[in-house]
Image 1 (cartoon, helix red, strand yellow):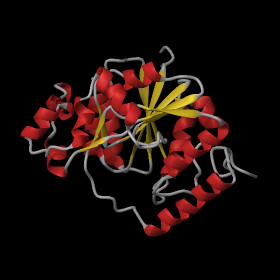
Image 2 (tube, rainbow, N blue to C red; image 1 turned 180 degrees about the horizontal axis):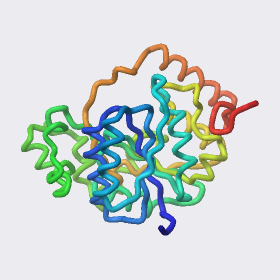
Image 3 (cartoon, rainbow, N blue to C red; image 1 turned 45 degrees about the vertical axis):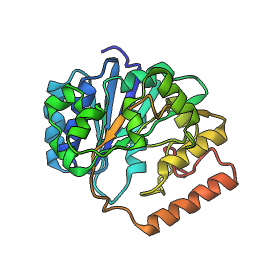
Image 4 (cartoon, rainbow, N blue to C red; image 1 turned 30 degrees about the vertical axis):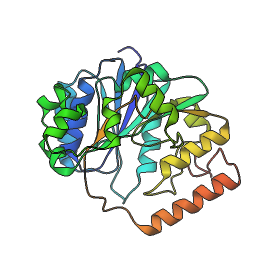
Length: 274
């Protein structure tokens, strides 16, 4: 197998119905020279069975990185997945985010030494999320604003994420007020830069661990580019049972230290202190 130009890390946890839709969306990518590395935070047998099935059906290699379920340990499994990536460039997304057919191509085209790329997502309601079929994905219906409206999606400025092309997308990327931060559902960067800051801080549980990685990349001297209106993924709805105020407060404190002390390295990442 030739070396992939890009490794796509997809995080998952016991959500095989959504993961299957996501995997089909990558089967439809216009850019083909990528591998998928599934960062599995302790899923059970149904996810294993799905991955074994899909490895035979999709046109990209799949590497399954798993550890035992020990609560929300996404930072740990993402670090393990980074080490398994065979490409020099890494795109990260989630097992509930379906990628438009040009998604990987956009990240490949816009990658640049000294930068990471920051995208967003388009949130779908639960009824539409459930209704999407494999054929819909192959026909790119979930990325078509008029199809989504026919399914009951309400009009919103956010719908521009799906309709913006070319100059309009470039313009909206430039004027969007959101800071281009590392967003775990749609961000990409160089593997060597992620390793240079020691990956994710494994003390961090739900809430902002991706942002903190981006903040350390900034402190390391890496800049970021906004591609929110170019790199399109749609987010399938789900409940968030793992969100606790305690974990959010803890993470905010870690992020404050990163910012105040201008830290680029974490002692709680890929390389562990003795």
